[in-house]
Image (cartoon, rainbow, N blue to C red):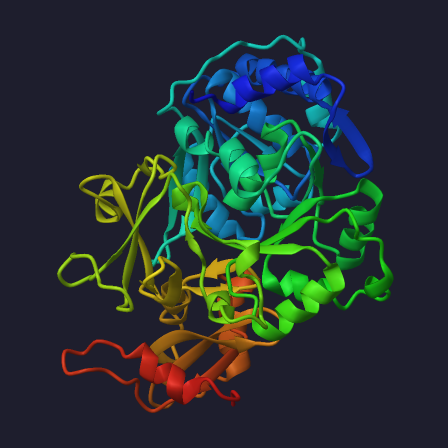
Length: 505
């Protein structure tokens, strides 16, 4: 039976009213309290004129109100629209123009990003939000959403550099408790430490996983390695999710080898392989099971996992550590030859196609992009290149979209290229990902300057920072006389990576 998040919380508030549901900043709310707070917020939203199907924007770092608003939106059929506070004001403005939310909830610091945005009623978190919410009764509006009703609108950058809003439905998100129980072995006694931002599917989806099965969520505002280690001890954390760069930072916390981490059962990671050296060190120090996950916003989260049994860097199956595992039981996965659209044989690289009820309904206001992504038969084209071995393990090979993953954030080269092409000194530019000790990958711009122009690398990096979030901007620039192209004029990025992945100049 498909249940909305509102229905899940109603059941938990009735069955486990005094059990801890959410801890943030040393304050804990039970399921009954979370139910009451989200009902007040739902009533406040309705009084503000928010109706079923309307978008409600949230622009803030992690806080308890993130979950409160998620459940409140579900209780009236509104669509929770998480906004990435790491973006620039121009990028936030473009998303707001597209999503047209009926109301925006914003943090005091993040509110500065609204400069130049459309006029929009905004409630500031803190005294204003608390007074606004508490002026309404803790009466559940009682909305029961249909399976195909949108619950999340999450924006993900596209290959053209324009943000796309993925529409996640009640049915797509209804797999969260199934993932929690069956894939991650979570239950009512589990404690999940969440540090992923709530504008990511990792925050909205995985972040709410243990909560949907009656367990306890410990939410962090930011990733502070020493705080993470302390929270595991204080709250007896059993589960958590991090990108490999964060795992690496945890191992550098002074005294981590002697820390009390005995409660930790499973550490999930994603966005990049762990690597043999880091994994061996993490297993020895953190002393828990490890699981790799692969998924995306468009699939409502995780669709393949590499189970703990396959995390043996010394064993005969160590090669599997380069894999993202196998699809979950309710997920169909194909490796498709992009030229013929036939299934590629084992060992041959093709594009990952996914069919599952978790798949998004489409991209908001973008019918052409939706048709290009969702194929007949409801297969979703991921844009990721991979091959599959004879045992069904999937190995990411490259990215058809040339996406760069830096510190767990998706960065699309075309977005950076579009900005740099606007600089008067740039004749041609291509952006590639290069290895980075801390972030895994980092963008590098390869630039052909116009004759008689002498822009420096520092000048071009500063130019991108005026238009894009800093994490998207190149950390290095190299100059070239030409860019490699094939006979048809197509840019050969593989050749660029071979010749320009060394030290920048």
